Image 1 (cartoon, rainbow, N blue to C red):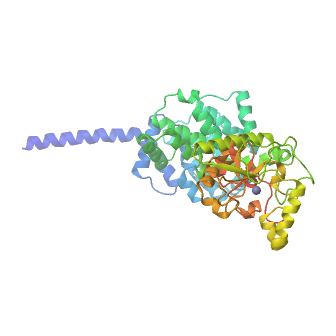
Image 2 (image 1 turned 120 degrees about the vertical axis):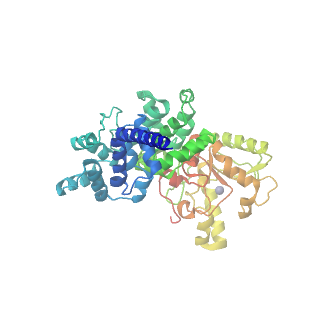
Image 3 (image 1 turned 180 degrees about the vertical axis):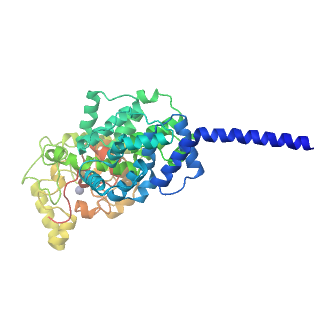
Amino acid sequence: MKKIMKLCLAFVLALSLCNIQIIEANNGINEFVRRLYKECLNRNADANGLQYWVNRIEKKEISVHEMVQGFFFSNEMNKANLNVWQWTDRCYKTLLNRKADAKGKEYWVNILIHKMSRREMLDQFMQANEFKKLCESYGLKVEQNTKPQTQNTTTGDALKDYVVRLYRNVLGREADSAGLEHWFTLLMEKRTTPYLVATESFFHSAEFNQRSLSSQALVNILYATFLNRTPDVQGNAYWLSRINRKESRDAIIHDFATSVEFKSLMEKTGWKARSNAYIAARLNNVNDILIVANKKHKLPDYYEPTGLVAPNVNHRNGTQFMRPEAARALERMFAAARQAGMYLIAGSGYRSYATQVSTYNYWASLYGYAGADRVSARAGYSEHQTGLAMDIGRDDGYAYLDTAFEYTAEAQWLKENAYRFGFILRYPKGKEHITGYSFESWHFRYIGEDYAKALVSEGGLEYTMEEYFGFEGGVNY
Ligand SMILES: [Zn+2]
């Protein structure tokens, strides 16, 4: 009996010695990760999180740099919502292991406000000798960051960075200059959106499909592309589980591309603001399909589009006219609706300046000018004068130009499918204060397929031209 006991004891001892050795080998990394939890996230490491980061470092999946980024740009940190002073304190304590001196703190706060993103500042801190020494004291070697970092800081360049990230992460190569220019220009002209470039082009390219990627590699790519960071623990586990449940890649990519974090990152690139000046000329050019007519944008008196044609569809109230590109698109849309079992009619297309004068006066005679302003445009302000709009109804005339039209299958189909043909629902529900008009489930406006698709992908089926292009609208003239 005693012998057995002794043997057991020896075995247990051997085992624990073994364990001690393993712990010692990993001790530095373990402690370093614990330290990141404590200093950066202000809490003790949980077992799963600790194991996750240690594994990734040991397997050389990520560098120490990337792990630090993972902590500083985690959801948890995001939620802490630190101001620039708190952020600077956190960087000093975590990366340099000391309190910020007053001068240094002032310097970095100033940089953060005026010159650098938090990401760039973090990179600067990790270049410091103090940080290298700190890492070495944990037995960690800090490799020079070999991956080229995004250097550009101005807003337009930040948008270029997004394209660079797509090439680097999704295709696994650097962008060629022609390709970079191509996508950048499309984005600047707002003919596409950050969402569409990723989902429809890069992630659907043959080059991407040829890569055979593990689930983890895919998650890394999605984070790097859309969120410009490495995955945090919970996020990583969540996405892996969805991928391993065999959810479609497109669904997962879509969720990344519509995430709040990605959208706010894109807003910071100045994507919206920058493009205003760029396309302002188009929005004011009567010959352009983007010409704006609302209560703040008046068309020239007696302006008439050239080459108006009657679309080859069923009409109501006599023959209706549109600009040729809009007419052709309307024909395609009506044909597709018919395939879906719906019969549409073109109710009211181009209206001349003179017609608009009498239409407005008619409503004014019934409701007064204030009442007329709610339902009809003053001459020169109507979209119908552009030849790019059409009021659409059902062939049996049911609920024509009536609020009840909204509840028909036809109205629903139009709302959901118009963008595929270059049309948008121009006066959506709840957007009166933006467009200046009450909800009109029947009024569709042609802006071309690229733009209609881009607009819907950016803001949904009830997004307005005012919001997408960022120009003025509203109920007052
Ligand atoms: Zn209309």
